[in-house]
Length: 447
Image 1 (spheres, rainbow, N blue to C red):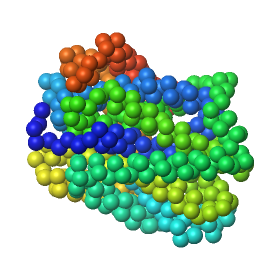
Image 2 (spheres, one colour):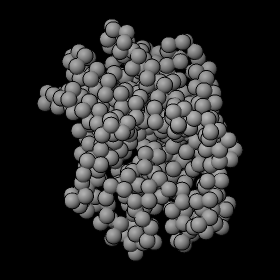
Image 3 (tube, one colour):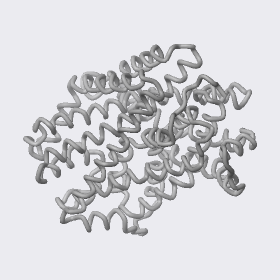
């Protein structure tokens, strides 16, 4: 154990930071439209099942690696196994975190723009037909670059304050605020005329709609929702105290992450059915259809402003954890101070994020294999690096890490029943690698 390594100060800090890392646009933006596209309740039920048979074990694996080594993702692989090829999995995680941070921050910048437009009333002045055109004009201009850089600068300010004073303190504030806003929205949605239809769509499973596409969609959503394969949970676990119960923390993190996704569905589907929108509208549901719905409500500008502020908070907690992967690596492998490591990581993301933001406009003709910079970063990270990283972490901990280390870390200062350990190891050895392989093959278009 590295005695001078920072640690989270409280149990609340552990939960707030890990849940904040998991909760992001995948919960509030991606989950509702994935549920809508795949038919509602059956998708939700299958998604929850995958969260607990794949998500929890892989989170436990990352927790074990992080706390047992007190190191970044590269150092953790190197410390737990002598063969150098395993350490290259750490490089994959670092590369994936930088690529995702770059294009994710562009989308986060869109939420900032829509928040500003909601507050100023600009969004309310547009009719439904104009919103699509306005969104396209915004994306193809230079304003997304400005908001991307602003968003990354906010990340840097928080991260410069360190683990306790920055990450933990901000997470302790932002996560309760996020849940309060979610609950306020849920109450409003449940009072809408279409609430019963929306809830029936979300919670009443129709298994006749279940096919391979639904299964793969639920599996992919479960994997990406928890930010697995990046090393975010591993990095945060390296700041856990020895008293932190890893299995319980993994279950609570997964449960709260799922809760946020379900609450997002409770917010969106009653509104969709009340105003006759299509639940299967896809990604444009958030930036084109929901603004139209909000502005049909009393105090529409308020609801729109709160919603895009909610997206901003979810984006911020996720990108803070993504940034910490690279910062910990630069500090520990190259001996940089935290300030220099944070600025370096932020600068890299700003340069790459600018290219991603411009790929919808001035740089849209700059392509690699027919993909713009934004699409390339998304494709490589989502379909190759994340699934491969998650699979290798599962295999590494399930097959190559000493069982005594697993037992010691999962037990912590208490005890753990042997059957729980066996279930986790079985899932890491067989279930998670097979499931993640299916996610990757589906993303690559092989199946």
